[in-house]
Image 1 (tube, rainbow, N blue to C red):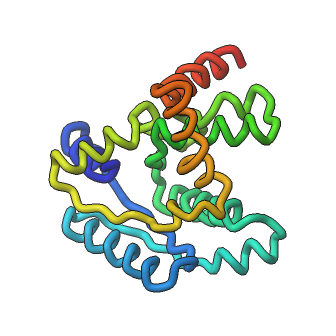
Image 2: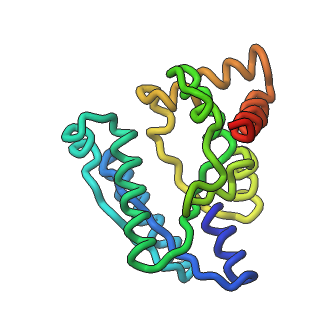
Length: 197
């Protein structure tokens, strides 16, 4: 969805779009297929796609951090390098409203201060998040309405990861039992906290 939107806007506003895909090599054939899907999609749209392969499991072990943290480090180092090498002004990531709610809840549970409760900022330095106020459901509807094919990372359903437990267990339970608009509530509060900060 993000690539489709940026591609459409590039024609309207006259900027160049690249894409970047990181294969973390954590999911065997599924990761290889996701990489192939991303490259084929970009080729179909006439967008240059940069690909990085990394052994995130080994990097995490060497750094003594979680695979989630190692993957994030690899991605942002890759993006930063591409921006330098190709004089790219901004990198847009597809973080959305649900991601923001998950981040705020995770930070709250871990005892974060006001910065962590501010959630994912719409812009941080040269990183922009055009979908940050759009829910995952709205993005899925956009894909359906525009007949966009996409793949689902099946590890998102694996509750071994903290974020996935929050996404798949905690937030749905809160929505069922206490507040059906919990994601919107968290998002609004994160905006208020960010303004206060």
